Image (cartoon, rainbow, N blue to C red; front, side):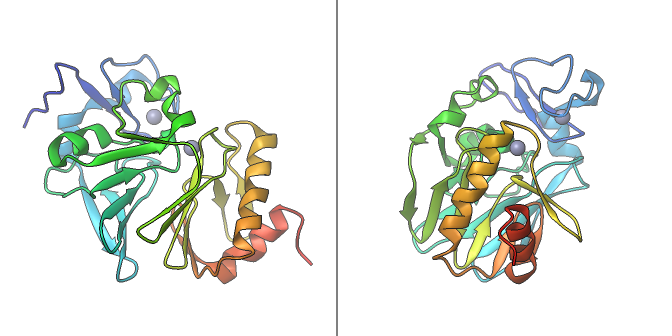
Amino acid sequence: MRIFLKNRDQYVCKQCGYNIIGHLPDKCPFCRASSEQFILAHECSEQFSVVKSQLTNNIFKLTTKPNLGIEHTSWQINAATSSYWIDCPACFDPKLKSADIITFTHHHTLGACNLYREKHQAKVRINRSDSQHKLSQPFDFDELIEDNYIEDGLEAYHIGGHTPGYTMFIFDETLFTGDYFFTNDQDLKLNPHGNKKETLAGAKRLANILKTRPIKTVCGWDTTPYEEWQPKFAALLGLAG
Ligand SMILES: [Zn+2]
Ligand SMILES: [Zn+2]
């Protein structure tokens, strides 16, 4: 299979899954891997696939098999009227039907959204600030968002911080945080990449939103019960006790 894209080649970094449209970079702009770590998108489609696993009745986790380095996790929501992807798999899997709308926590997780957009006419939606980053320029966006919104039960909150357009989502008592936090058994840390002061300010904005929202599960790289996640989040912000 060969993917033709307006005569532009597309490359995928095997260490982080970032998709580069139009040229082979000397280094991955995202994880700094060398150019030898890149494969063409059609090679990626041949060597990898995207697996969908069910989290709740309406929420599914999308992961690449075998693992594509440190690739982000993407999530599918089947809402009443439309289906949504929050972040897009890095691998274009021709057997996978995309959601009606592909939206993003931020521009690091664009994945192969342009290929799913072409194949399935998915609408691609991102915060305007993140659409303006130079890495976003080769991608086509159908909708640029500037504010919070609620649509079809999906709540989107513009948090900013790690990237200027960073957006978190809530659906059915599930919070989607993308890569805003790094976690281990003991604690939660803010993603160190980006403006540290703004990232902390964004986390405080999230804390305010969570005061009024019942949450059961947090989906970032993986899923964590809110009762486990919340004390770590409170400790991170110095709110514990
Ligand atoms: Zn990379
Ligand atoms: Zn990121």
